[in-house]
Amino acid sequence: MSSRQSRRADEVWPPGGDLDSDADCVELNLPAKPPLWRVARMTVSSIGAVAGFDVEQIGDLRIAIDELCTICGRGGGPTTILSIVARWDEHSLLVSCTASPLAADRHDDPPDPAPAEALPPGLSQDELAERILEALVDAYGIDSSQSGVRRAWLRKSR
Amino acid sequence: MDESLEVVVKKSGDVTIVHVAGEVDVASAPELRGRLEELAPADTKVIVDLSDVRFLDSTGLGVLVAGWKRFQNREGTSRLSLVVTRPEILRVLEVTGLTDVFTVHPSVAEATALSS
Image (cartoon, rainbow over all chains, first blue to last red; front, top):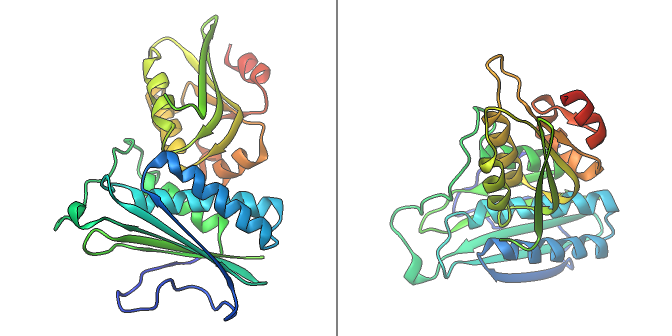
């Protein structure tokens, strides 16, 4: 079952998983530049293979992490860093993505979104991204944040 | 130009075939958008051949939907159709409900035959 969850700022981050205490963890930090989403895709695909997901599930993870990067990285400044943390145990994989602008990039107002296609109702860029996440992962959340920090997460079980 | 994407446009009679190869993501989608916008909207039937696309995300889908709109007829159908052979690309179209929007063909030959 898929679910979209909104989070309060004081809740544990990332939510959505009750992984074993000895869950393995990989963290990847990269500049919020779209050509580097491929690095995130490759990394999470590899983690999916290590964690025992099958080929189709790995394909799902590859698309899902790309959508997280796009959601979080949209409108990021030149020094915005995407921090991707993947944790997994024998049952599931939890991936969080946080886009944090450095102090020089911080704005009081949210950054302008990247140019989006003029799409028919129900087919906006964000709606397409959420339809993909709803279909491909067990749960996900998107946090519209303050201070220019944007974050999202997903959980997929084997 | 994004090196992960190759777009080749060919005309065959009154049908324009846009062959796309590589990965269509947020980095490379502007290249595809630009090539679709170069096409004359009035006089062509357009087949976007995605059979060599290895990856397609929501940004790429947005570009395709914008192209679909650009070639939309008065009766609501579109002169832009897709060729999809890879299951992973078809899956993205299916989960977003876009197989109900686009006409999807299994081969360029079939798409050309039905478009002519």
